[in-house]
Length: 354
Image 1 (cartoon, rainbow, N blue to C red):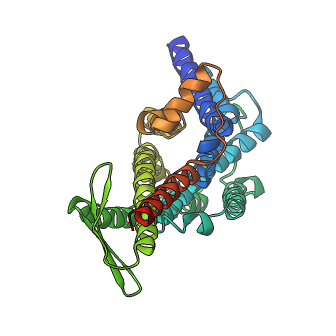
Image 2 (cartoon, one colour):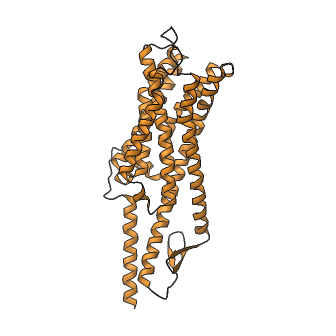
Image 3 (spheres, rainbow, N blue to C red):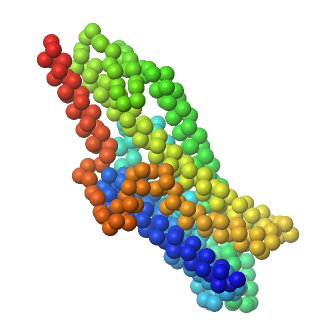
C-alpha cells in the first residue's frame, strides 16, 4: 500500500512541477503572452511551483513513511513555507480578479491603469504579505511541540489558525467573489447591447449608431463629418474587440478561481473549526484527504489554461515541440494597428468618392 501511495504522489508532484514550468515558459517564450494579466498568472505558477518542489516532496515522504525524518527545525520551516506558498497563491488569484475587473470595465484605459511597474509593486506586496502571515509559528505563535521529533504537523493553535485562515483565504475570497460578480454584471450589460444588434455611443453632441454583426461592422451613413465618424467608429471597434478578449480571459480565470475554492475551502473550514472544537475534528484519514485536496489545486491550474485558452494551448504545444515563438508586438497593439489601418483606408475611400 505504501508503494502505491508513493507512486501516486510522485506522479502527482511531477505533474504539478512540469505543468507550472510549462505555464512560466509559455509566457517567457511567447511575447504576445507577456501581458500584465499573464504576469500575475506566472506569479501564481511560481507559487505553485515552489509548493511542488519545496513542500510536497516532504509531505509525500511523511505520508509514505508515516513519520517525520527531517528533524524539528526543518519541520517548522516546512510548515512556514507551506503557508507562504498557499497564501501567495490565493493572493495572486485575488489580484488577478481585480485585474480582470479593470480589464473588462475599462478595456481601452487598461494599459494606462495597470502598468508593468504597478504590477511589479503589487507582486512584491503579495509576497511580503504572505511572509507576514507565514512567519508567526517561527516566532513562537504555535502550540508547544510534541516531545517526539518524528511527529510533524501544521500549527493548530486556535489564534493562529483563525488569523491565517482569515487573511490567507476568507478575506481574499470575499474580494474575488465581489470582483467576479461585478465582472458578470458588466459583461452581461455589454453582451445584451451586442445581442440587440445595436451599440449606441455618445461623443459630445454627436450620436453614432453601429449595427454589429459577427465579423463585420456596418456603419450608418452620417450626413456630416465623415472622417470624425470613421475615427469614432474605429475607436468603438477596438473597444468591442478588446472587450471580447478581456471577457474570454475573465472566463478562463473564473474557472481557475472556482477550482481553487473547491480545493481549498474544505481545508480552511476544517482547520479553524477543529482548532476551536477539537472534539469535532474529522478523522485522520478524512483530514489527510482534505489536506491533499488543497495541494491538488497546484496540479490542476496548469491543466485549466490549455483547456480554456487557445493561446496557452498553442504555446504549450510549441514548447513540447521545443519551439520558442516570439511576436514583435503584443496582441492588443496588433489589433489597434489593424483597426487604425481600416479607419485610414475608409477615410481615403470616402475622400476619393467625394
